[in-house]
Length: 236
Image (cartoon, rainbow, N blue to C red; front, side, top):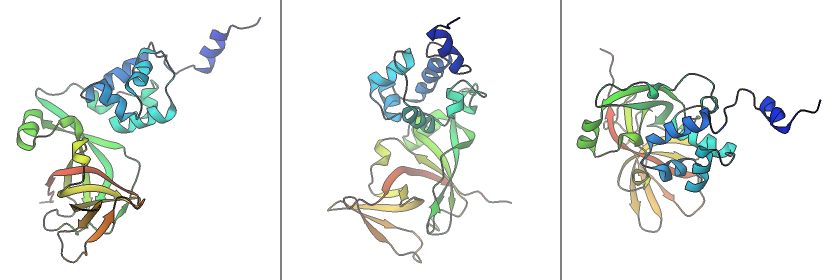
């Protein structure tokens, strides 16, 4: 007997949720991390209409788009596909608290640490009102990273935990301390924007020489976020 096209498709896609089922549900759940659907679509690097079609099951998502969205929201592609447990941040939050993801990417306060694929290893709870009032940040834009090295001493101690604002406005290079990607390395440095598409990259430790980056010369350079606070963790 010749099997129907639908039967063959169901066999090939066994274990993978339909858009009318688990996948659409999980996309809708994750987009709550963003201000609106347009911002969620931007995280996937697709148009709002494209993302909406994914959620409503009107179009097949691209692998690249789903990978972008998974990376931005701190979940795995397996979880999006309906496999595996719920991500930790989906657990019920204590009253007035928000979970901030802690990533295993080390921001080097030294000569550079090789960038690794971002993957949250834990979530720490913070009072949402305190974050907004004390630092003027959107908690949904925050990530926690570990600092390594001594180039930003005494401002940032080795092994400090950095709270980084990764919102769109915070990724605009200005004057302040930022986490940046430079030629594949992740660094935490003080930036100063200068005329002529130039940025001065310096360290608070005078033993490290500052250097210049020109944004128009094709160098692999990107501002990943602004450091909001550094927490010095010491074993007592």
